[in-house]
Image (cartoon, rainbow, N blue to C red; front, side, top):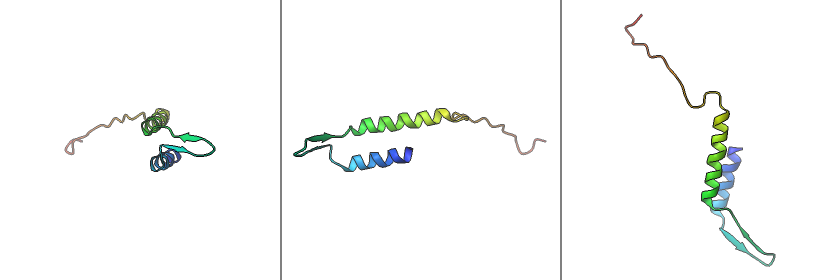
Length: 65
């Protein structure tokens, strides 16, 4: 799903902000709103991760045995 959202943001950024025609007018969401939605969905995926961004390592000097 994140790839689809990236593609959508890219397509919306290339297109016009507003369009009007005989059938009516169309306005897309602001890019800042789309970026905020992308960050929100990415953070939701990160929360589901078991590691949650923290990793603990034990450092052992090379001369210790």
